[in-house]
Image 1 (tube, rainbow, N blue to C red):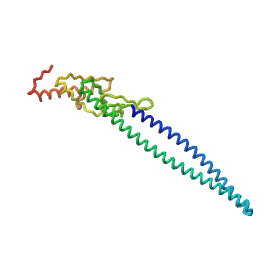
Image 2: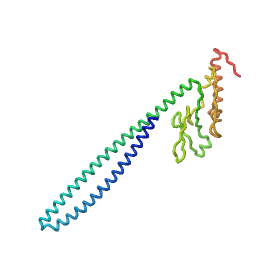
Image 3: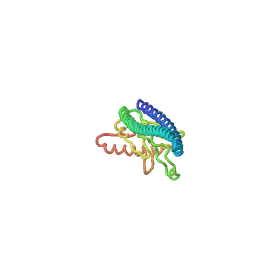
Image 4: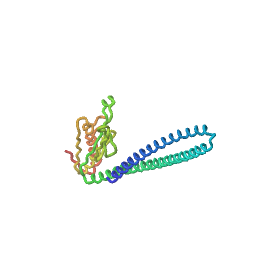
Length: 247
């Protein structure tokens, strides 16, 4: 939560600073452009007057002094523009550096979240707690022929994501997320043979993949046929060491 708050503050601060600098730069650019345009017009007028007033030395000296003063102002404006350009470059470099820092912090935050959830799951598994998994079923042959696409994706091993209103992503977190390419294998049979009560309960609306997960198909059997096959494999393997009873 602290990292999220820091990220939010940094993003808001960056947005405000960027917006303020952009407005300031636009105002200064317009002002400089206008002043340069006015000075160029004045300069052209002075040149014409200088050509027509060559015979009058005093007028020529006065106009020359005015032109020199205008040149000085123009040079100052050019220096101001160069200073503004330098400040804009510095601002862009700072924004780029802050963007890289934000990206790094976000990556570290996501990595820490995944590790924390993974370790928490290990502890909960050791306690024998009820676990809630999310299985994303693969597209059926009909859906593939109709060129349908997957509506829900796995953001990571604990999070599912789908597009909500205005195409904004919405996420849900589970104890574990299995993508559409996950196998039907389960490691709970050994726990049952070891004397623990094990139950898998599939829940979901029609078409969400309950039957596929539990029963599967000939090419890809589900949890039930795999569990039964694994159960008898363990019984055959350990039949000489233990006495088993099935009912």
